[in-house]
Image (cartoon, rainbow, N blue to C red):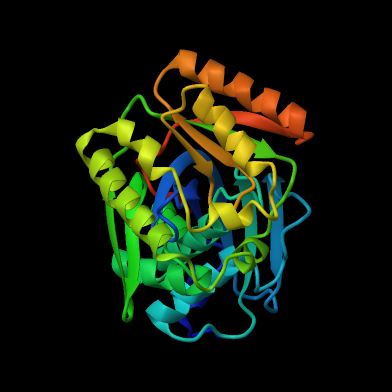
Length: 320
C-alpha cells in the first residue's frame, strides 16, 4: 500500500456539485433529459488506512436512508472511475463521504444518477483527470443502465442521448432563460425498477410512430426556440399510459397542469413527480393552484417546487 499512488492522497478531499434531472420529458423515453437546479453537493475524504471502511453522512434528502457500503451509487461511480483510470484499488482504502442533498429519492428527479455522476467526477479528479467526458458518460450509463438522467447530470441543459455499440452519443443545448419547471413532488415513492416492470414488451405501431413524431418535432422546437412545441413533446403513448396502472393519479395531475396553461406537462422520469413547464409568474401561480386542487381531490399528498432548468452540469467545486 505504501507505494501505491492512492497512498499519496490519504486525507485529501474533493467536493463535487451535481444537478438533479428529469428524464423522458414525455415522449422521449430513455433518450431525453433536462438538468434541474436542485443539487447534491458531495465531499469525499480519502482514508487509505481505514481497513476499507465507508463512512457516510447525509444532510437533507435521503438522511438515514442511503447505504454505507459499496453498493452506494456514489461509491460505485467513484471506484468505477478509479479502476477505469488507474487499475485496481488496493484493499484497505476507505472513504468518508458527506452529502448535502436537495434531490428527493425515488421521485423521478435523478437522485441515483446524480450520485453516480458525482462519484465518477471525484474519482476522475483523484486519478488526474485521466478519463474523457465521453468515457465518464459511458461509465455512468453502465452503472445506471440508461443515459437520460446521467447525461443531463453530467452535461447540464437539455440533452438528447442514445447508446450504441460500446458508446453513448449525447448532444446538449442550453435551456432558455425564462423557462421554469413546476414540480409536484408527492410523498408517494415509485421505485424505478417497479415502474419499468409495468411496461409491455410490445407496443402498437401507431403509438411508436406518434412518439417518434413528438420527439422529432419537440427537440427541433427546443433547439430553435419554439417552446410551444413542448405541448407536443410532453404527450406520451409508450410509457405513461402503462405506468398509470400503478400510479392512477397521474393522468388527472397532468391534465390539471395542462388545463392551467402549462407549456407542457408529463411524468418526471419514472415518477412520482409530475413536471409542468411554464414561462411566466402568472403561469406558475395557476399551475401550483391546479396541482394542489387536483391532488386534494385525489388524496395525493405532496409539495410544489419551482426550479430553473440548469445549464451547468456536474463539476468539481473544491479540492484540499
